[in-house]
Length: 391
Image (cartoon, rainbow, N blue to C red):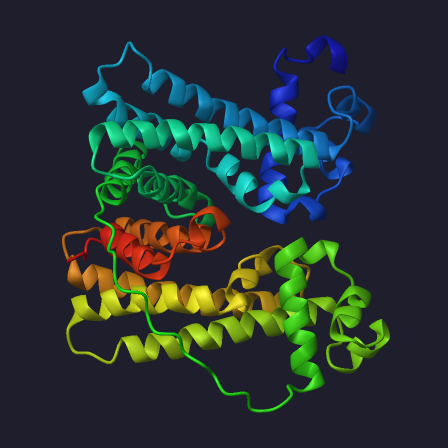
């Protein structure tokens, strides 16, 4: 039987699904057209009949997933749904999609920068419209909320659903969706603090940083702006005021730079956690740990960059070591949460912790909300709400 005669009518979607799994597992730059064709059991020319290139496949996957979210939003917030039920209907649909299509959230979060610029702009435009619709629905439920506060809470709720892409922990689908709904509602019901503006803190200079420190700082900034794969050693050298080859005197490769960035971020988190845990009360310790994470992520550029370390080509030993450090850190949170809330099953505790961390990670990188004057206190409150230790 020929390939043409046996080709199912949804072959385009099937090929995209295969590619999506590969992109999620290896990262977009680490997957070639031949890899996709081999995994799908087709030839390269057969694949090109459906997609011009792998970037077109990524665009198809991400945009299709986004269209599903738009459709869920339109359906839940339509006139056919009573206003009192619209928010719950929306969360239910979004939670179901998140559980059933985890790979879509992963690609949107980690590989979106590889989309054509016009697709990125289109997603940004449509995202704003979706968030505006969610915010309007939330304000209908909570009319006292200013529009900008409603938007912040909706961004955080979106991160709850997106958090399923950063881990592999799972529970029964129905319970998984229900847990995500509960966590999102915790966020949407949050009362944001309005603390006084904290006093500015001046840090005295201890002299000119070493050349190695300069290289590391410039690499961190460039990776954050452009992504690891779009930055060359020459770019880093130029930013640090040295010739590209001179960078190799300090770091043998670009991957070695990322390893150093990852370890520095881990060290700073460990120090902050150690200080936070200097209390005998577990609930207080968890609250302090969440606050320490928010403070560290907002003042440590290496931490945001290190999130993409798992998609970087680096020695397996270094990658495994960084992953172990990350897992140990998350385990601290899970252990504390399980102690504070003993009725929460272990897997659900882990899902809850990842939701809290994802809110911090996402919102810290979302310029639209990160510039708010009391953002650190607000973000800490949102983490406390998700963890169930607010107040």
